[in-house]
Image (cartoon, rainbow, N blue to C red; front, side, top):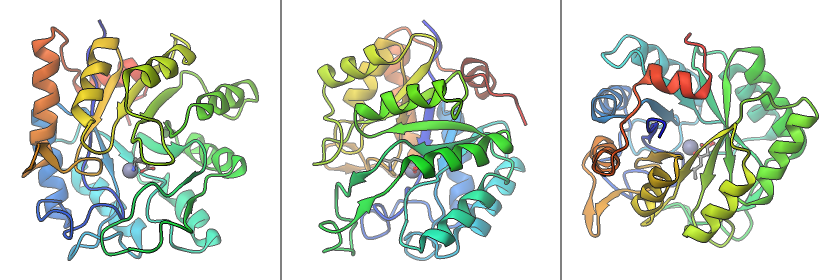
Length: 293
Ligand code: KMH
Ligand code: ZN
């Protein structure tokens, strides 16, 4: 079986701050340190959000923060890791502002960006933001998806297609036919089981995987307590896995992860025990058809 690509989603946007766990990396130093540790533990991709350095809430001016993270990572011991920057999360700014952010955000030298493939209602309440969940829609219109994919392709950035519900796989396949997405696609199945996302269970994963043509690649991210279970299933089924504090802050029941690298090491250990080796960043580039920048 193809080697396993592990993505470390270090810190997330509004959902994970110091109010949730003291261990979430928030400063540029902490982020770079975590990237190096995650690379050592087996991650070949790191997924980044811009944090404010104090509390770890979303940075109010995210692009300079993200640019600094990328530059610092390129100078670090983990300089070969594939950097994947969010184009979601923290959407509390005006639409025009967000559009400008996203256009500029594809130019920081990263090789991947998340591309959210449809709209969902907010599935949980970020700590400290109680009350917003009833009105907030995580909005990703077809026009937005098309434009943001265009910005990525213009700058040689591969979109990672975040799928929150099964129909969004179909959106991606239609976008290929319409020339708005380029093959080979790479999907990230977001299996949260909140009231607006796919349920983290084997049946749903199988349903999704059967709808993704074999020539494409896929990964699973299961925010919450099913992270390792769904990750293990993906290991067995030939998919790839994303772990990290953006999705899950616990190493095991009641035990907070002190570093993202502990979560990376756990899924790497499970995979190796099951006979599946872990991909290096260059091997991940080969599997995902990413040209090194
Ligand atoms: N927060 C995750 C469930 C993004 O950053 O664009 C999905 C995600 C999306 O990582
Ligand atoms: Zn994210």
